[in-house]
Image (spheres, rainbow, N blue to C red):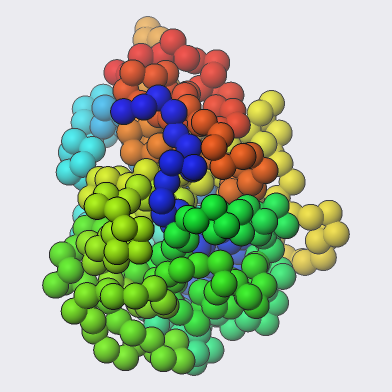
Length: 451
């Protein structure tokens, strides 16, 4: 495979919406998501009222790439070889001795080779994106509460979390104004969403004018997608995209057979009829990558049109688009924002500072003191052993399944379309595919070899 990647060589450019084209004001959206679940657990399921109170310090627990063992209430951070680098029971971090006793440098019991391991199963849950992370803090605090009040050793609260998802985020929730999340976003979108800068809007038009087919593929439902796009791009946003697919139910969009996941027509944002195939551009619901690719062949007149897909979730976007569809993939990795010199970038415009009251989440893209770097970590040294550094499992997946990783679309919007990016590849260094700069912790440890 060529060492460089260029948008000019692609026929089709696809985008995820949430946390990709649409950037959220993370300290505000995190609190809203947390409250949408906590209120449900306390009011509907009788959980401890303590869950409703969050201090700014509590948010340090949030870190992408953690797995929750749904039976024992432990959160773990994995090395690329499947061993456990750090762990907590609820929010309480395990001391090195306890970590060694519990996990002992062995492969985690559910670890499988990279392609074989699901991110979600009945046994564990991986926290993979900024919608997930407030739920990690809530689940950890639920474990704390149940351990303290009931002395529980095994846990079955996950069914109540799923009920909370259904209550707040079901397909009809936006229209019915139910739950906490959608009514609040509708009431004050400017508090939670960043509009796309002019450079990004201009770049999207530039792609269109260069003859690229533009796709939007989001798991958000049609009505919420419309609200987001009108707010971040303007009322004429539909002119930018040839095909819009909502309620895509990723990663199933990529992994399921067409017979399992047909496209549906939409009328007034409601699904109408299932389609045996996809025959023309437009706005659809659900669907599958196989039928989409057949349409893209017709639209481009090519037997193998080249597709690149931008997304923020390794689980829903990057891994399945690469693994099942063999698309090029651009990972939006906000952890790269302001990583240099350890100074977090401003997460919101200055005019918004101090405008909103309440316990602020730390920006979820900044370093967690509890969990350490998203990219590299050491197993805390016990007596007579030296700390040894490991790539994290999350870091390995980035270099395995992403073509390149960028902090935001804005970071590349002013580059010429034929700009040649260095791509990740097994022959390149681990830092090759990060643009504009690799994480400083990776740059400082370039000689680290995978364990």
